Image (cartoon, rainbow, N blue to C red; front, side):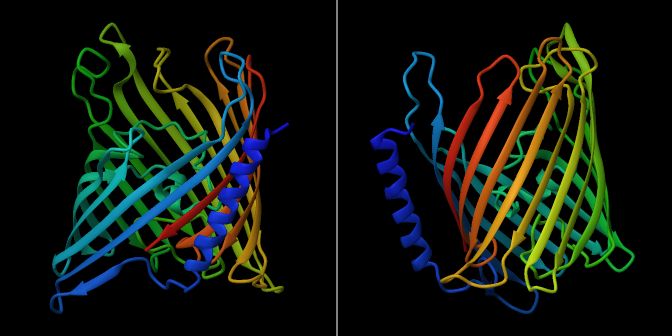
Amino acid sequence: MKSKNQNRALGLLACALTGGALLSATPIANAGVTLNIDDDRWIKIGAGLRTSITSTDAKDASGATIAPDMAVNNMRFYLTAQAMKGIQFTFNTEKDANDNIKMLDAAAKFHISDALNIWAGRVLIPTDRANLDGPFYQASFDFPSVRKYPSINAGRDDGVIFWGLANDKKVKYYFGATQGRSDAGGPNDSGSLLYSGRLALNLWDAESGYFNRSTYHGTKDILSFGIGGAYQKNGAGTDIANQGDFTAWNADFLLEKKLATGGVGTLEGAYYSYDLNGVTDVSLKAGNSYLVLASYLFPTKVGIGQFQPYARVQQFDYDAVGSGTMDKTELGMNYVISSHNALLSAVVTNTDTAGSPSVSTFKLGTQIQF
């Protein structure tokens, strides 16, 4: 049973989110503002914010009820500039868990042709759809829990990525060589690289850029299949005497179709397999996991937005003896005002982890991008 203070906090947040939605009622066609210097040079800037309040039906270690958690989930500043035709630079920031602003992306981008692009610097590792979506372009408010690839920060790593398009931009490939795990006194004392890759096929509309979305809110019909993975010799473990190779692969698909009713149906799934070569690692997990999501965007606007209910199931089956499984179910409702640039979300989640009590949460969240 939620306390009066919890209910009051949730009510206040709901009012605040509604007010924010009204202030954001003007549709945003494209996030960001572009300053054109001449025909070949330009600068584009933007920003993104995700905030939430979460009420947890559980108790802490002392036996006290956990208070509602008000959080700034993400706060990002975006900058991309084109120095000359075919050569760009991107610099994005993100706050960390201690509310410090840190570098998220810092990449030089060379466009040789549609078939060959080279990105160098701090880049997003190209393994699975979820990572290429990022937190702002999911069909759900929360990023998947069953994704366990290593990174320096938010799915990024320092290195170089080769990627390109073929077959009318409906086939997309990636290959990356990045730093990966490299801890002084820890695993990978030899300095081996993390190699990653992905191959994606779109049978309907193309997803031509580096990044993806897990819902296009009816602007595209998508039927996409992807497979990817990563490998690093001695990339797992706790110290030099406890090293193992990190090997992971995943397969995913997305089906999204604008229906005869005018609504948009979405079905997404992903499977992951992680192997640590038999060693233990506090930051990585060995095992197999999956997620399945279904959603429907209603065609009729209610006020300034459209409702998009969704359900998602996730499971992680851990390899470690006695670890068992983690099962997580979600029921959510998005209120989509301007695609991924302005939306509100309400999510009920239940998580069952072997050996621990079941935990239920209720979350209200908002997302704004410019």
